[in-house]
Length: 293
Image (cartoon, rainbow, N blue to C red; front, side, top):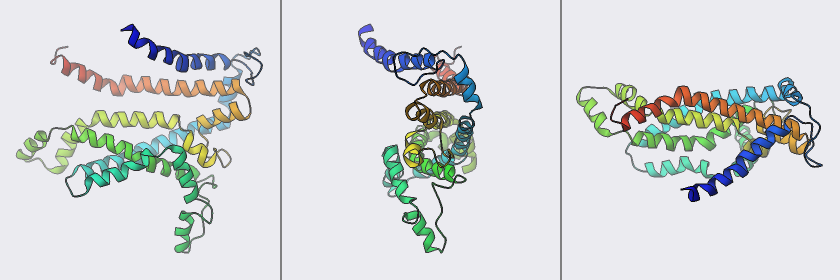
């Protein structure tokens, strides 16, 4: 058994545990990444600077905003589409493939594509508006709307992934439950409320978890699109960390930001696992032992 586990464990230690511990170590130093190991110990100064940094605080607000929009718009849209595509109609396989294709594209390719679409005066979006006599909009240059434009792109990119998860969850529900309920006179709304939603609860909760964690780690797509601009209006926590560490060479401060990202994800994951996903795990364990506690 140890022979099979050892390679994965070694890779985990080298590429996950060691970088995390090293980042935690350097977060307490003022260091530019050169000249060997850091020696200028500053204690909690980097963390104090971080908590007073308006860019960092704005990053947290943007994470919260995108998370709320994802739960309120992106996930319900994917869920509704999955319910439609579960129905038996000609060409549904082609529609499933069509809606899933954006997820296959890499984030960098998606960003380049939409940079062309939202290019000022020459892009497809402004050309459509010009057809209606409307002047071009600074889609990616207006600090008041850029975050919503990015959310729209994220929705286009990832709703297909959530749609497939919802579709798989719906297909796992036995049709006999619906047939029995229909015999008892249940309406479509009652079927949805008392069978579909409860039995798809685990899938719904997993997609919310993935959406939140993905938002915290958001980097590639936004960086290629706007590099966090204009005036930090679309900057994410990962972009702030990159800019501080690899552009300004403030490795110590960037390490503090990385620890903040790690703790934010970890704390959310633990709380979500304990109070939300815990019921699914408990139900699975109860089912596996035949209902015995």
